[in-house]
Structures are given as structure tokens and as C-alpha cells.
Length: 328
Image 1 (cartoon, rainbow, N blue to C red):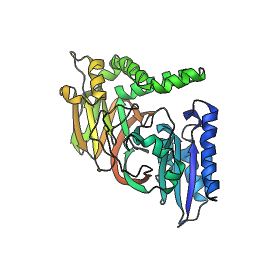
Image 2: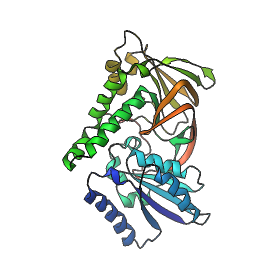
Image 3: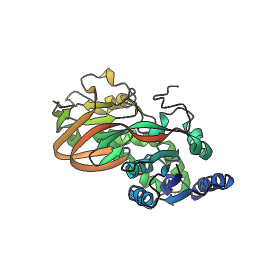
Image 4: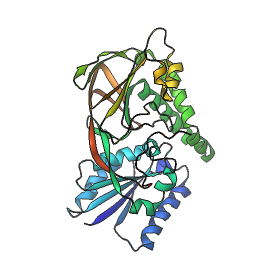
């Protein structure tokens, strides 16, 4: 069976142009040294560009061709590539980490950057089945958060984008201080009464859990916000979603408890955080749902969510399998 290799590069993932050129050179050097011509490089031009480009590219291939798509950058380009391959029969998804966050790849172990940046290892590595979250018409690998956490992500991303307009030193610092930006966004979001008192109509596996929540957070993998891990038990190969309902109260200091929750200490506050394991969730609200899926923000009126077991074949460049939370 023929195999085609398609690299999708997000230029915004590189804080200077020479680094992007270096990655491009590594790709070309490997394929040229092996006399392999069945590869293509595409530079993403705008958000969701890859989602439309990949199916069009696949149409030109013979029916029995395996298309291995490499998302070069961070979680945003990985999201785009995932959504671009979901309707394809013979597609595999790989990720080469250069973004400010690479949440999904952190679960492959501490060597994830070394292993997943190695083009030869990516080329030769097996593809293993991974679960996918279907969120309405979109798909996510790591998480879908609604309410206060989605606003936290939006504010952190807004601050990051503003800093990226500065000089390269500021950009470099921004990449290393993203968690600080995240917690600053959380402080602002937790003070917003709109997110602290929104009523949601919620069905979890067909059972009604409607109430007033600060938000709901669905995890397929443990990491988000760079190295935060609210749902330490979430694994993208168990056919289960980890769902948190997040309640507010008059005596709750939201920001204080949110910090511990983001570090996996939700059990310290059972009155505010409840964890459910499920396979499908239906969420509606009179106010628009404020949603972040793998760092991509949406506003929609309602959302149907389900786990799709083993829905994508993901390239395991480290060959250790998905390890989940790594402490130390």
C-alpha cells in the first residue's frame, strides 16, 4: 500500500523565521537523503486552513493510499489537522511539537519533544488508535471546556497574541510564561459574574444534571494550559470521557480553588467540583455557550458531545505508548 506524507506547518508557532526554516530544512534533508519523493509541505495561511486543505489534497491520491499528516506547531494546528482527516479512510495523524502548548503530546512522556521532533522517527513510527471527542461538528483530542475555563483560555490567548507583536525577546519570554498568562486569565474570568452564575441544561449519558455552574470541562487526555492537569485520570485510549461540573457559591473564593483544581487537587473541594466518567453529554443554555476545544474558542447555542473510541490513528514517535500524567 502506498503512503503519502503531508506536512502542515503553522508559521505562528515559530518565534523567529530562522527556526521555521531550520525545521523545513530538516524535513527536506531527511526525505532527500532517503531518496523519497512522496512528501509535500504546506504552510498554513490562516486558522482552519488545514481543515479544508487536507481533504482536497487527499482527493488527488489513489484510493488505497495511506496519508500521514504531520501537524508542525502547537495544539491549534493539531486541531486543524485532526478535523481535516476525520472523514478520510486511510489517514494517520502525527504531531511535531513547536507550539507554545503541545498538551496532547505531553502524555507520551518526558521525551516527547526529542522523539516527536525527529523526522526519521516520525517517518518510521507506528500509528496507534486514539479516542477522539466529537464536539458538535468539530473534533478534539485533549479537551473541551465551557464557561469560566473557556474564558480563561481566551484571555490567555489574547494576551499572548498582543505580546507576540513585540520583539523576539518578548515572544521568547511569552512562550515560557504561558502558565502565568493562563492564571492571570483565570483570575479575571473567575471575577466575571456572567460565568459564575450561568444555568446549563445538562444530560450525562441520558441522566439530567441541570444546574447553575461556573462551567463544565470534558477531558479525553490529562494535560491543558501547557502542563496543568485537572483530570489526571483522563486517557485517550480508554473509551471514556472525564467530565467536571464546576459549581460556584456565595462563600467560594473561585480563583483560590480554581488554582488547586488546575493542578489536579479538585478532591479538596468536593462542594465545587464533581467528576463523572461518561460517553456522551448534551449541554444547552439560554446564553451562548463559551467553548474552548484544544485551545480553539467557539460561541454556540448548544453542544452534543460524545467519545469516539479509536477514531484516529496517531503516530507514536516515542514508541512507549500513551503514558498519561508524568510526575517529577
